[in-house]
Length: 236
Ligand code: 5RP
Picture 1 (cartoon, rainbow, N blue to C red):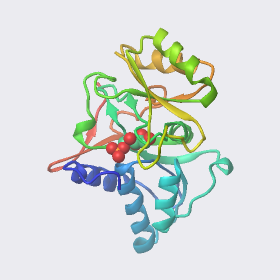
Picture 2: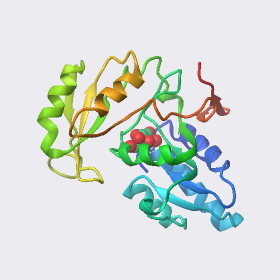
Picture 3: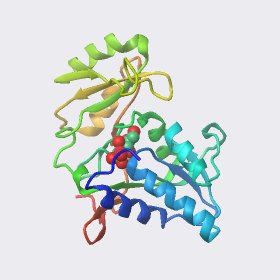
Picture 4: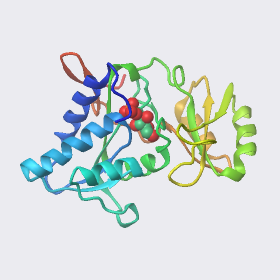
């Protein structure tokens, strides 16, 4: 589990509420991070105790390992063309339900999996809500290692105020993603999330950004775990 903070109860409530939406026979996409982990563990419990029959795909090594430990069937992503429902956390959520993701550096596969899904459920605690995307979190950009200097220059041209190569803990040097790439965390004042997502994606050498504006949850599909229950966030 990534953290055991005061927000853990909200994360747990949201994760359990999302897991309760899963139905027999479905293909399920499993997100990454501490909130998604609550949903994965709960799905494992439902499989063991309720006989729920599902097949899953994972968005990271971390979620794959947790899913297998929880007793879930995990299929390789390259064998799957569509998913019924996917569940994931977020780092920042704006009032239109645009997201910043990638705190766990898993946003490339997360975006792929959630784009394959008919329904994308986001689970979070209230600390993730923000009046404007980018106010609280830098945009993670996965880039080919050989492209990093060029990508930094292009991100600056797009208006990034500060760009940091993400470093790991428990390892000297930069974070290497599950895809073998680097992550640049770029601070932006974001006026138009969809336009910025497209602009970053068009930079040669960029694999994917953590802006989820083209693929975001539908109104009501963002579950916020709060004191007293789980709120379905409506897009404004
Ligand atoms: C991983 C992600 C996570 O979903 C995001 O960082 C939220 O994590 P947590 O639920 O631990 O707060 O995007 O790449």
